[in-house]
Every structure is written in C-alpha cells, then in structure tokens.
Length: 193
Image (tube, rainbow, N blue to C red; front, side):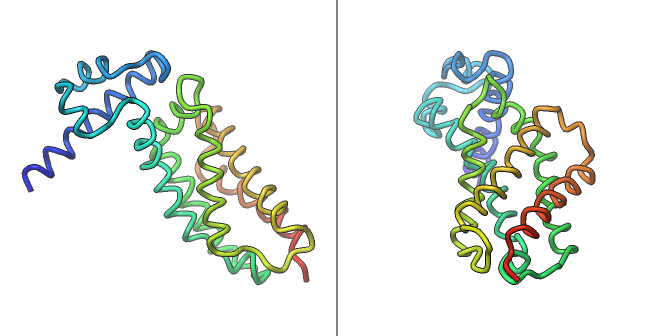
C-alpha cells in the first residue's frame, strides 16, 4: 500500500512537471533532465515509470482520452439508431462531456497548442470513432454511415478544438447547447424514417 501511494505521488509530480514544462518550453524542447529536476526525483525513478518523454506523452494523453472514452460509451445510442428523441439523455451526455473538458481544461489547452501534440485532436476523434464502431452505429441512415460518422465526429471535435483555442469562452451550458444543436441538425438530416 505504501509503495502504491509513493507511485501515485511520483507520477503526480512527474505529470505536474510535464505540464509546467509543456507550457514553458513546449514538448519538442523539453527533456528528461528538465522533468526530473522539476519533479525533484532522480533519473532512475523517472525510468521506472516511463521509457522516455514520448512514452510519458503517450501515457498522459491516454489518461485524458480514457475519460473521453468512458463518457462517449455513455452516449445515448438509441437516439441515433432508433430515431428516438430523448433530448434529456442527449443533454445529460453533452453536459458530462463539457464538464470533463472544463475539469481538464489546462491539459486540453496544452496538448492542443503549438507547444503540445499536433495529433491530439485526431486522437480524440479516433477515441470517439472507436466507440461508434464498437456500438455498430448507425443502421437506419439516408446517407453512408461512414460519412455520417465523419460529419458528426468531425464537427464535434472541431467545436471542442475551437472552444479550447478560445480559452473556454462559452459556459458549459452554452457549449453543450451548441453541441446539441449541431448534433441534432446532422442527425435530423441523415436519419431515415
């Protein structure tokens, strides 16, 4: 138990140092030496947890994406597959997603900035796309499911990217309402009667 607590504290210190340095110098310029100095750990401790800075980035992003994935798995799929109009379920879902984005706003801002990972927004799209494929969504469409998926996921991830880029200038309620407007509009257009 004591080792588990030590591991959690060490990873927290490394992640904190990583975010600070990401903001200060950017991913391309940061190195392991900078991180161990900032986290106040020794080199061997860092390498017990991560192979290198790329492994750290990958695991850091994976932890952020796991939150998006778990929320995406709660998506009201019946809204898409059965032309159900359960606005309340969709609204609750959008609210959870925006709350998660705000709660992790600093990480999203850094990872999506020029100092972070240019591929991160694509990784968000892939995470949501995997949920879509896992649920075999949708079946009753007036256009190709691949293009429907591209339109929905593309518009939502671009809206997320823009909201992050704008410094979360809309409230979570305003942003959720915007997501719902776009989602509803796309689905109303493509759902077969």
